[in-house]
Amino acid sequence: MPLTLLSIVLLAASALAVFFAVYSLIPSDEPALSSYSGMGLEGVEADHVSPVVSALRPVFTLLTPTVRWINAERYRAWIERKLVTAGMAGALTTDEFFGYKLIMSVAFWGLFIGLFAQVVVGWDPSIAATIVVLIIGSFFPDAWLTGQVQERQNKILKALPYVMDLLTLSVEAGLDFVSGIHKVCEKSISGPLVDELSFFLGELQVGATRQQALRNLALRVDMKEMRSFSAMLIQADVLGASVGPILRAQSDLMRTARFQRAEREGAYAAQKILFPLIFCIMPAVFIVIFGPIALNFLYGDQTIGI
Image (cartoon, one colour):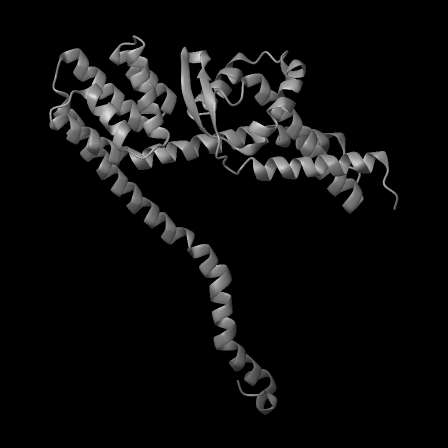
């Protein structure tokens, strides 16, 4: 069958959809400079972003005039907040993210409606089905961004007890709180939590108060553990209390919560294994055990012994 212009467009859109869906999940080795302009925070380095963001950002930039008219302030604020929490505030702007959504809508349309439905199956979809596929494609970047946020928060949550222990030891050894954080940033392995603490120190150096820097830290990370940590330190700063006992109590609390999460995940794993056990393993066991018995019962002496 000769390739028409529509077939070429559908194939190109399908290839674009596969490219975005696969390579957007692969982390990059190149950090991008982040600018927290919407929150008054400039200069922090973003975490590793996917190659699709860094390589195809010019494409998103070309599409920004077509999506700039979208006046969804609350949704734009949500996107900007997620980009900050994911560590990609400088890697992608809100308008470029809308361009990403537009590209994915067209790509999903070409993949599912154009290629799969019309070319492979031979089904002419209705307008409602086309609209549904376009909406699903537009929400793929939202799901991808939420996944990036959760991945970064999991890294911070995993490193938090260790960093808290180092900070507690530093403060109890005689250093003040700021010097303790500086020592932790020097001795700890680079990661999202160390980057956030380094930016916290940078805010203090440019003149921000400790309370405001702690509030910005909790706002950027957007985790209840970090909000609790910042609230306790702010309260200790207001009351003039010693930071050492508070850090020790917070460190013990976070370590206990970590063990509890591990036990909870282990209990969930025992429940999740029931599905493959019942539907995959047990039928094979029944076939091996009761198969020869059933054959012997049906065919008698003609059955070949196993």
